[in-house]
Length: 299
Ligand SMILES: NC(=O)c1ccc[n+]([C@@H]2O[C@H](COP(=O)([O-])OP(=O)(O)OC[C@H]3O[C@@H](n4cnc5c(N)ncnc54)[C@H](OP(=O)(O)O)[C@@H]3O)[C@@H](O)[C@H]2O)c1
Image (cartoon, rainbow, N blue to C red; front, side, top):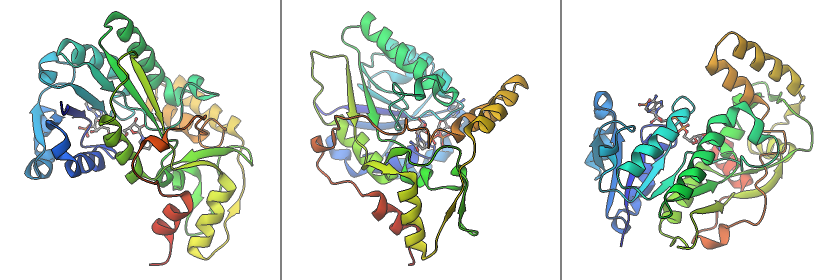
C-alpha cells in the first residue's frame, strides 16, 4: 500500500525542497503531511495550497503521529537533540518507519563519530538501534549523501568569492563525497518507494552524487566556472578545536557546534565508504563539476 508520510522540519533549508519533491510524486503516496507547531502554521500556507496536508501539534506528542506509516525528520542543529523524544512519540503514535535527520557523511566512520558537530546524530542512531530491539516491527532508514555541494562550496568553508581565496581548516589532498541538494531530495523520496527487506530493522542508502573528489578539484571547478584562479591556504584544524573548546567552556552551544563544523569538510570523513547504492535509483545524479558550473558559471 502507498505510504502515508509525515515530515518534521518541513520549513527548514532541506525541508522546503523536500516538500516540493514529495509533491512531484504525490500520487505514489497515500498522504504527504508536514507537522506544524501551532504558533507557526502560517509558514506552510503555500505548501497547503499545493496539496500538502498540515498536522498541527508537537513532535513530542504521540497524537501528532496517528495514522502515519513513515516519519522523515529534518531537524536542524538546534532540534537535533530532541530526536530521541520524537522517536518515542512516533512509536507511541503507531509509526513503524523513521528517517532520522542525517543526509550527510557516514557518521559511523573516522572522526565523525567523535566530532561534537555530529553528537546528536550519533545519539539518535543509538536510540534507533535500541528501539528496533524493543520493537521488532520498527525500522529505520539512513540516507547518506556526503556534504551537499552547495554547502561545501560556500563561505562557511573559507571561500571568498570576491577575492578568489580559500582558507579551509584541514590538510591538502583530503577526499570527500558531495551531492547537489536537488538530488538529495530525489534520493530521499525515491528511497521511500523501495520495499524494505522485512528481515531487517535498518537499511542504509549510500548515495553520493560525486563519490570521490578532492577539495582542490572542487576549487579548480569553481575557478573554471568563474574564469579565475583560487588561491588555497590551509588553516590548522587545531585552531578551530581551540575556539570550539572556548565556546563550550563559556556555555555558547551554537558557537561550539559552529567551530566543530569548521574542520569537518577536510578531515577525510566526508568520503562515503563503499558499497554505494546509487544503482538502486532511477536517475543519474549531477556531478560536482556540473553543479558548480550551474551555480557559479557565467549565465
Ligand atoms: N550534508 C550537508 O551538507 C547538509 C547541509 C544542510 C543540512 N544538512 C542536514 O539536513 C538536516 C536538516 O537541516 P536544515 O539545514 O534543513 O535545518 P534547518 O534549516 O535549521 O531547519 C530545521 C527545521 O527544524 C525545525 N526546528 C528547529 N528547532 C526546532 C525546535 N526547537 N523545535 C521544533 N522545530 C525546530 C525548524 O523549524 P522552525 O523554523 O520552526 O524552528 C526547521 O523546520 C540536518 O540533518 C542537517 O545536518 C546536511
